[in-house]
Amino acid sequence: MGPPKVGLCFGVSGIERCLNGQSPSHWVKLEVEPSFCNRLNKVHDRVIDPFGRSVTYLRLSVTDRCDLRCTYCMAEKMTFLPKQDLLTLEELDLLSTAFISKGIRKLRITGGEPLVRRDVLKLIDSLSRHLKSGALDELTLTTNGTQLKKHAARLAKAGVRRLNVSIDSLVPEKYARVTRGGELATVLDGIKAANDEGMRVKINAVALKQDNADELADMIGWAHGEGHDFTVIEAMPMGEIGEDRFDQYIPLSIVRETLESKWQLTPLAHRTGGPARYVRVEETGGQLGFITPLTHNFCEGCNRVRLTCTGQLYMCLGQEDNADLRAVMRSSDNPQEALYEAIDEAISRKPKGHDFVIDRPGSAPAVPRHMSVTGG
Ligand code: SAM
Ligand code: SF4
Image (cartoon, rainbow, N blue to C red; front, side, top):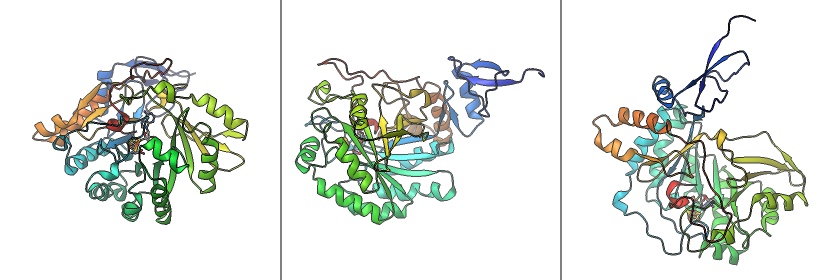
């Protein structure tokens, strides 16, 4: 054996991850402090957090408002941010572009309901230049689908290839109850319009003990029959909703058991750097994802950060620590450079993971902000 080679291992936890992606057993591991990580990130056009995770995915919430009021997401009566607090579309573009320069390869526009933000299509059109230049691999959207029919053609033209659409029931009355007034047929028309424009649709559903736990198999069967992938999500304790999440929450371990009594689920290696784990349903041929932040968190592979419509950067969905990039951007003569520094500094604080738990009735949410603020 030759002399020991020196590799870099980021983080105080000693995760074996070296700059070139290899970690042979005879490498000498050097643990580095976040400040060193930060300095190293300055000379690379990418950001790596103290746990060795490369941050390549930004979720951008363009509004906290929504035309629905899903019972697990929002309270019936919500106070939204004053419109004058929102970043302008130009500022959202500048911020997104700074992240792309720092190595973000995938950008998801979300909210609230992103398609209710006035002129959001102008932002998406503008950001599509990063797809054309090759700086971005994917520009995508999570939507409730209510406005999709109207916007599908323009989204496709901007280079959006895939969309996530949230549907928690295929029974119109139940859908209306869960969303507090939504019309299922409108969303299904939106999905059809998206498909007609060549976009792939993935259906997201939050598993709800009382509302859809007994319907999920039918929903998955329908989605796969229509050619859509499907992801089930555990309800997360975010924000006050005027109901007890304990009454809504069902662990996906139980949902999975039920599905396994009906179908053969074959685990897939496919990963997105996110919290989902995927299986193929052999009987339908379709792909099914499980997002299990409560029963099994997969934070060790987390590659994402989230930016709110007021410019707060959250390094973790389930933690409160954030960086005010609006203040940085508005107070600097050279906003781009100032943003690069602020992004490096913020990501050097990315925590190891969240502490979500729903284990007894009446507990307060783990974080006070609603999912609609940070974008799901
Ligand atoms: N309005 C869009 C939609 O519904 O798809 C985008 C924003 S919404 C906050 C993004 C995703 O978060 C949706 O799939 C929604 O079901 C999910 N979501 C909202 N609140 C949640 C919660 N407390 N726990 C788990 N998922 C939640
Ligand atoms: Fe609106 Fe999406 Fe929240 Fe439902 S989940 S209330 S559609 S932001």
